[in-house]
Amino acid sequence: MTLLATLIDSRTLAAINAGANSSYAHGLPASPDVVFVYENTTTDSTSACKIAVKWDGTNVSVYNHGECNSATLRAVAWVCHSIIR
Image 1 (tube, rainbow, N blue to C red):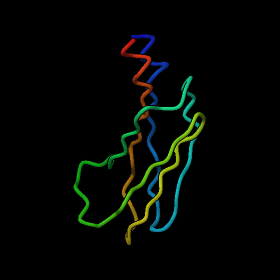
Image 2 (image 1 turned 90 degrees about the vertical axis):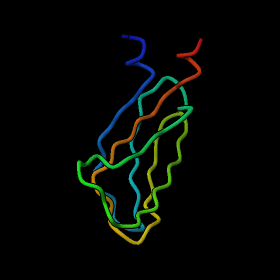
Image 3 (image 1 turned 90 degrees about the horizontal axis):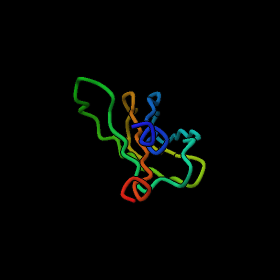
């Protein structure tokens, strides 16, 4: 389980306004294989936010290309190929 903590990074991100973005340094030992981003709220948003995600060896960037402000978001980045080995 300790190994998984070094291969999975989970963050709460502040709401992102329409047309804006947010980036953070993931701290993983390699570029993530997959990044999941979802609303971190208990109520469903009725707005049409279009969230896009880009990542590399050091950062994860989340973009809101929609016409609305997002709710608080949760980003989970995984280095899956190291877990499978």
